[in-house]
Image 1 (tube, rainbow, N blue to C red):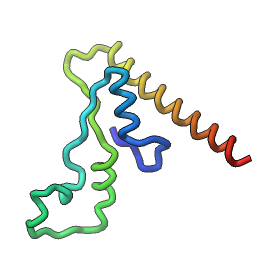
Image 2 (image 1 turned 180 degrees about the vertical axis):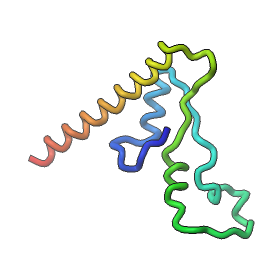
Image 3 (image 1 turned 135 degrees about the horizontal axis):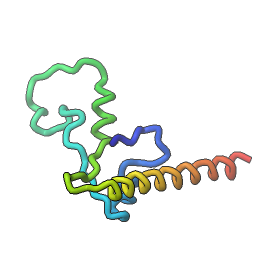
Length: 101
């Protein structure tokens, strides 16, 4: 799952919420591989800004899954994420109405 930089919340905020709901997650290892210390002294070339790789590195994470998940568990994960997004969207809309009047 990737939290876009334009989202009204950050990856750490969503992960913290998921942890509170007992939904496991892990950062995606990778993204912009040139950020890895092993590549600091290796000759390489870059094509473009690598902005997509940077966005993956900064915004992507895995949700905890395993073969034993049933439909109820998957629905709980989906509903929890929807709840979080709804709360964050409501907060942003409230702040816009409150502070732009």
